[in-house]
Length: 118
Image 1 (tube, rainbow, N blue to C red):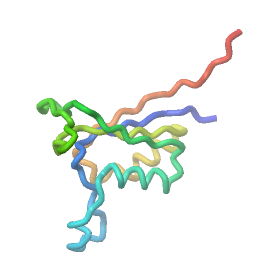
Image 2 (tube, one colour):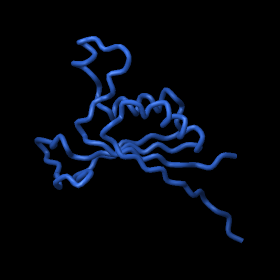
Image 3 (tube, rainbow, N blue to C red):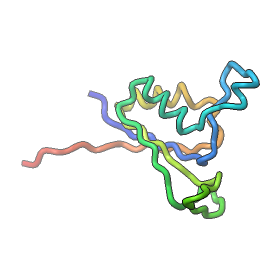
Image 4 (spheres, rainbow, N blue to C red):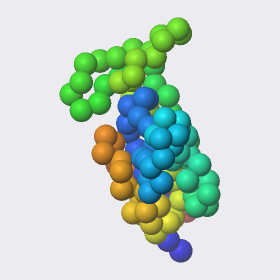
């Protein structure tokens, strides 16, 4: 059995999905958010678990610290998508979807399951 792995993808809350091959004007204007795009792709690809984490405060890549506000979220406020599944499946997903993701940081973490004592 393949071991579980977690892929965390960090990006700005305002990031948009890559344009892709069909570059119509309408497609450029109404691109979905990167979070929405990645969650849909993960679901379509059968990834076992996908979670979007929204943060109240933080920064990416040495930028200024940003805070969430009830009326307005700064466009540089970070967010994170975590994908958990078998290592082969997560790495295949990343390999297929990494093109066009220029303003993201990714971290692979090995998961530990429950252990039997005794």
